Length: 145
Image (cartoon, rainbow, N blue to C red; front, side, top):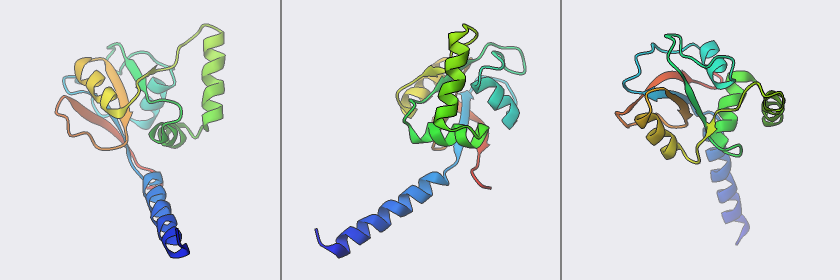
């Protein structure tokens, strides 16, 4: 591969990485869930296990993407300011003491949307605004804006 093509590919990769890093993250619930839009603090409390119920008292089933998923990394970095290592340490301490379990891990964003669509108590996040009418956005997290 010649040098010009390599530079072009590197430029495209950098542009995509920058665009991805600036992406919004959407916190979603089942469309039938009547909770009002969440605050950032409420989202932190739900995803960090500090509360197990929505503000209206309904049970929460929090869902997570896999540890190496870039949307997950962006979500927790923006929402909590924690790195992956800090997040792992946080959950390890809580699991070791038997206090809490981390959110249920779902392998893909499509899997998350399907689970939230089927479960009125589920809450999760995705990296693209969902088009599925079975879910609705309750918080949009915008990086750096």
